[in-house]
Image (cartoon, one colour):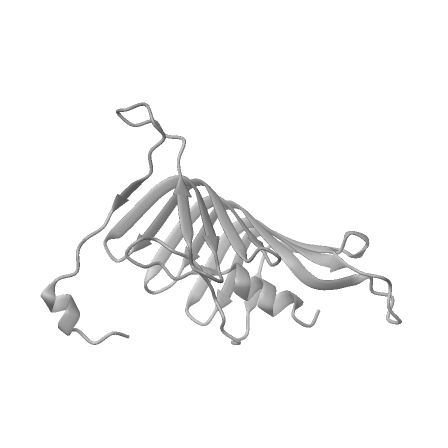
Length: 180
């Protein structure tokens, strides 16, 4: 699985909140440590499933979920008997948490799709960086452009679907502090 495991998991590590919540692909080449209660590889379907308190660690980033499934591209069988190529989609389910020293993203489900360079987090989405918080039901992020769309089915006063964000303005003190 050349690009498969490490890059797929690294790509699924949601990251990069800014003043308006955004997610970006984690591009680290650091090792990825995956632990779970069980792992199942179904070669005929080109997928690997991690179940039970799944935890993925890479450098200072942590992804936690009840279940994570990696889907590999199907290809013509090669000399080694493998008909599976690189990972093209990663799905995490069951109270998905992505945590770094600077941000936290929570949702019921997260999917990273390589072809569209898109991460979709759904179900009670909460994105936090510092004091800034954004909430909605669905967050779609393009990892190439870092464009973000937060959506919600929660009705506001005008009976429209509303997302909610609380963003604290930067202060002069913040500008003088060194950036990590």
